[in-house]
Amino acid sequence: MKMKQKLIAGAIALSAMAGFSVPAAHAEVSAAIGAANMYYWRGLDLGAGDPQIWGDLIVSGSGFYGGVWAGSGDAAMGQEYDLYVGYGNAVGDFKFDISVWSYSYPKPSATAELVDGEIEYVSADPLSPGDLVEAVVMVGYGPIAFTYYENLEGADDYNYMTLAGTFGDFTVKYGVHEDDLSHVDLTYAYNDKLSFTVGKVVDDVDGSYNDEAKFVVGFALPIE
Image (cartoon, rainbow, N blue to C red; front, side, top):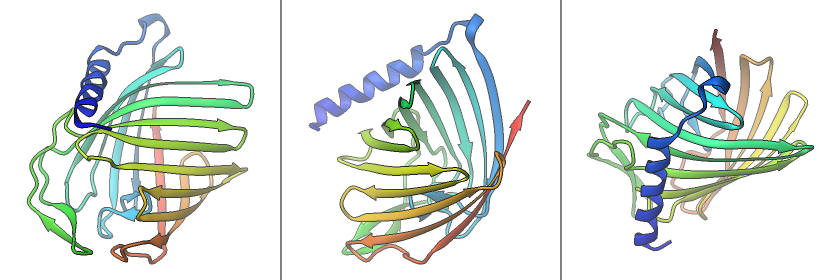
């Protein structure tokens, strides 16, 4: 996507966030808090082994939703909060969801960059709403779902995609970052609050990432 198109897309995304609303008569508000032994993100441990805590607040109605997610545990970028809006629905076994996310980091300590095949940490500027924006599209049928993530602002030409299947309490996911990294996750949902995940990088073109298996224990608690 050309830079002009990206700027236009980013502006549209921010306008959507600013103007999003759900009719009060149909709106539902939900919230949750949670924790995990690491910040596991798309096959990578962003916290370098440190645990993560997070919270989520969602307003939804008639298929539309919007909210804010906040979490700790990112070793390089520090505390994070994300704003998002979207719409999802299902017709029979077919389902879809379209959303836009803005990722913000008020006080980053550093950012990771790949330099000559090695990860280096350099000083980073704060990221405010609208600086790093991503569109997410999911389509699924029955237990299978394909999700595509496309950067709109802040990370030129980055994309990520997953193919996942949920069978009973187990979910298998294959994820691909652009063309240089892929991973496989196996998750067991003990119940709607406790889950266990084993993830492993299976294809690292540059050999720059930790490909050891990662074991994640996650806990989520709805706030009622």
